[in-house]
Image (cartoon, rainbow, N blue to C red; front, side, top):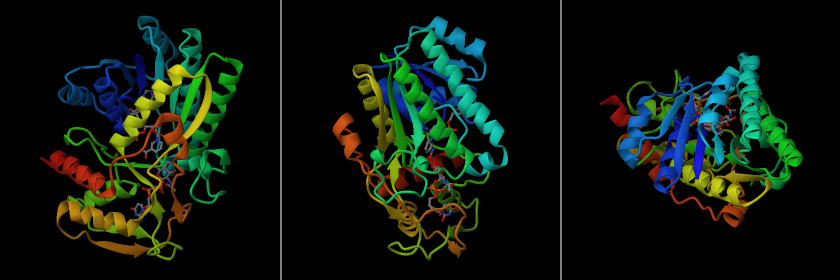
Length: 334
Ligand code: NAD
Ligand code: UD1
């Protein structure tokens, strides 16, 4: 299939491009390089032997988008482009709504104009809010989001659902990611956080690399195995493989499906820390702090629907996620 990947030089996008190319798909990347580097194209080429066609285009630029669609006969779109920092979204909500909502609508309008019917969208487990019991099931629907970033994911889900009702030939798969971590085994692509990382594993990676003194563990008085927060971490390469299955599913079905992508298993902050210590071979200092506002105790996926509809099951465990993250971070420093 000829597939447009928006945000394709980003963290999850780059891994997905690798898996798509390795499955024989033709990938065209569109990214404004706000949070990624053009060098990623070299890395994708080194891993796969194929250099994807690239457009430095902003999804807010309607004319630019039109040109990309006019020049290519896309069969499908995987839409990753967007802003993703929770705290920043609270501080500058309009910027988040403009980029993640107005930008996405531009893209969907272009898909309509050029009759590109198949879409996979990057949603997040954050749309469940803290309204439901774990494991989170797709049938629960949308919860109460706690920040503008989460609300942009929820709104996109609603927009795509309505759009596909109006256009019954369309097909949309809304993937609700749990916590993607890790990096490609080659150590060539991975997550490069901007500024001080908010997420757990990028922060641990920087402590392990000596860039920060200790991990701040946000609370140890939750009702969990050791009192620290529990999440469903998934290897980014597993997540990338789920996208290949999702876009192939979209191309052969109509309507809209919401699908969780996680492992179905939860690990606590301290369990992840210890897995990372095993990967790097030395202790990682940490201090217990107050709870972080907005955090929930436990979050993990019910993965039955992904298995049933997509035939997808995550393969990699927490040790492999930490080993690959550590390898990528070490290479970055070299
Ligand atoms: P990322 O920041 O690494 O990748 C996003 C890419 O989109 C970047 O390369 C950025 O330059 C590009 N981009 C942003 N705004 C753009 C615009 N207006 N026009 C063109 N390109 C633009 O993020 P990621 O971690 O790879 O996440 C990809 C998607 O998955 C995002 O939509 C994110 O919200 C979603 N998601 C991520 C996580 C996570 O933990 N990483 C979890 C759930 C959902
Ligand atoms: C966070 C976002 C979520 C977003 C997701 C993207 C919040 C409240 N939620 O989810 O909306 O979709 O990232 O991946 O920001 N932790 C520490 N110390 C740290 C960092 C994290 O103890 O320095 C703990 C947290 O309290 C939590 C766990 O590690 O228990 C995971 O945190 P994080 O990686 O930020 O992910 P989420 O909170 O699940």
